Image (cartoon, rainbow, N blue to C red; front, top):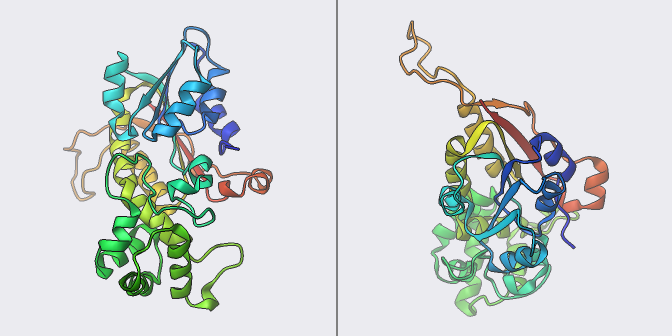
Length: 307
């Protein structure tokens, strides 16, 4: 069962206009999209993007027959191309949930989770890029350590990478269960936290790397200014510090006027603020939501409005 995170908060703060044009950058199970559609009139329009072919099939089936909806199999980093295909210049709102879909986590064959044993893949679009299996079975220990440290913020990255390369010399990794146990063995027992598998950060890092997730978020953030109408809003839901930092820093840069060095007596850059930040602090899930959906516990929502 897919449960959309921070649903009420996102919908309320996006200030949905009944006849507006909106873009859902991460369609997933369609939970956020369905809530937006409840507020759109027949004149409204919703573009839904997802690069996962299975998600695209689900979304098409769910919203089949709704003339307001167009589903695109696309990475949200290519949102400008999607707008061109849809014949849209600017939208009233763009939003994205950067988390992994529960459908992806629960399907062991996708290789996203250590809880459901399956082949090590982790690609959202299985037709593109290298799989996580290729990373752990062919990359050098040094490169694996860099990936785990950079994208997982894992302090035992070198130990984990060393253990991965030692184990694979005996037998190549083929399942997520094998990889998870190897990572668990590499993390000192006293650092095993109750309720959190020791392989959590490593799996996160591999997923982010093989999907180029942070680069895609950066590209999306760089394009929203040119794709929103005045008064249009952007909403981004992040699930860890690396994602949130990109969203926060980009919105902060968008909201600044002059960026000249303070020692200059007058502004020479000519920069003017493009956005007004609505959420000075990120919105986080309530205790009730976290209890009902533990996967929401690290979510942070940031909203900004185009000037």
